[in-house]
Image (cartoon, rainbow, N blue to C red; front, side, top):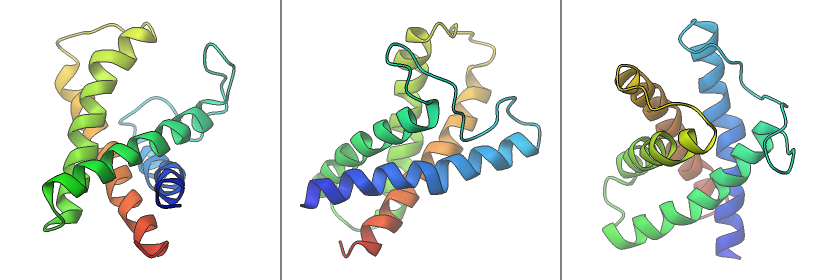
Length: 135
């Protein structure tokens, strides 16, 4: 049951923390794409936001394993840093190239900062839901 709730926490964190943060960045003109995209993803044609939430659930499992290993002191900071760094690095180095988004060194710092903000929000949001679920 622990792992199911962890997955749900990460899934919901995308919808309730990551995507609203993306909406704020979009409304401020920082990013050109809007949150809660229903555009189909390849290869299954699942809406982008659902795909992101699914992977948010999977990453939540890794987050909990990480927190179990490094301890629970400063847990909020650790969750934010895990999301901000691990998820962003994987997105920039693996996901973006798989999606055909070029690795432009000039854009890397900006993309990293945007990813860090969004994914740190996800990490904190995942902890919020874990706490709500009684973890």
